[in-house]
Structures are given as C-alpha cells and as structure tokens.
Amino acid sequence: MKKLIICALTIGFITNCSVENVETTDTDITQTYYTEFMACKAGPDQSPERMTNMISEWQQLLEGDSLVGSWGYAPAVETNSTGDTIWWELQWTSQEDANNAWGAWVQNEDAMAWEEKYASVLECDGENRQLHDVAYPMAANTFGELPDTGYFYAEIHICEYNDGASKNDALGFLEGFNNAVNEGGYEETSYHYGNYFQQGNEDGFLWGNFTNSKESMDKANEAFEANVRDKMFPIFSEFATCGEVPDLYNGYTLYWSEDKDFMPTFPSS
Image (tube, rainbow, N blue to C red; front, side, top):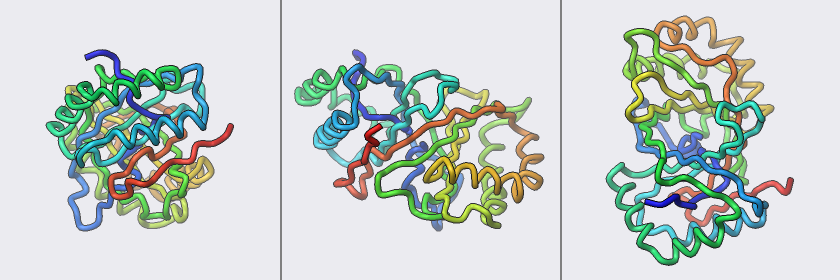
C-alpha cells in the first residue's frame, strides 16, 4: 500500500483521542478499544482554511459506520520526542472493520483524488500506522464539557513497565486512580485520560491526559500534586516508570460518529 494522505491536523489524537467523547458510565473501565495512529507532516500549503476544506471533504468520503471517531494532535512545543510530527488518531468498531475500511479506501477513486488534492496540506503515513488497544477509564465530560470548537490540550507520557509488570498491572491501577481524581480539584478542566497499549509492544504504554486548555492542564497537574500523587504514585511506581517530560499537543476532534455534522474550528494563527 502506498503512503496515504488521509487526515487532518492531528490528534490524535489524534488524544486521546477517542478519549474525547467516549462515555464510560456503567461500563468496565478496563475495556479497550481498537485505535490507530498515523504519523503526519504538515505541507507547505497548510492553513486553517485549507485544513477545514480538507476535513470537510474527507468526512463526505467516509462510508459505513466502522469509524467511531477521529482526532488530530499538533505539537504544542518543539521538544516533543517525535519532533514536529503531527499525529492522526482513528478509533474503529474493531480491527477487522478497520482493515476492511482501509481496503475500500484505496479502491475509491474519489478518495485517491482527495489525497492528491491535499498532498501539499498534510501527508500521513497510512502504510505504517501504529495499532493500539486503548482504555478510556473516565468519561470526557466528568469535569466539564470540551469546547464546541473541538479543541483539547493533550499531555502524553511515555511509560515503561518495570521488571515483570505488564498491561494487566496498568489496567488494574485505573479504578484506584479514578477514585483519587474524583476527590476534587479537577472541576471545569474537562480532565480525562487514556492508556494506549501498542500491539506488539510489551515494554510499555502511553498515558494521555486531556483537558480543555493548557491552563486547565496546569490546574489538573496542581490537583494531582495536591490530592493524588501521595496516594497513587507509589502504587504506579511498582509497575511502571514514565519519562520526566511529557509530549504536549494542541488537539482537535475531526470526526465523531454520534454527531456526523460536527466540524472543528481551527485557529487563524
């Protein structure tokens, strides 16, 4: 399969992020969902207007109900571990459905024309997309709704398992973490999070935090230090270690199957 130009500003997102809209009420918070990430590069013609046109036309090309949501992640700082890479996140109903959708995409003449039209706006590596099983333990609106623009701020921690630990340890940690966060301090931040387990990688996982702004992320981190760290960090440290500096992104919801008319509003600068 050739390199595909399929997405938008990514999440992502790209963050979560399927995280942005998944409701977890009365569900198993350790349940995982199939999600793909594609690495993208901004082209010389990228602009808010062209991004809006590209996403609008891409949405019109979507067929069926296998795509649950899509998010884009653009670097918010120059120090991210993947440099200036933009990430596009796609959450699907299943891995089989995703493979079928990709197969149909490359046979679609209109889709190929769309790729060519926007090749100078954003270029994404569909052939080498990264496959993840993702847990979304907390509903996106637990601490307030996200902006109508589709914007979210993302903080991605790269974590490694300590000796003998595994995905099961990470999933087992989630209930206690939720309980600690729910004790307070996160109000009006839209804080929620996700754990991203890349298929074929038994060495670690990604922990993504999401809020409605950078200021809200700062508030959430203050709440973590005040109310959560002492209770939960020693438990977390028994099975995993994360890098000291997270990757930071400005993210946008690009598509959500429960509101197919939604369009993100990209900033003018």
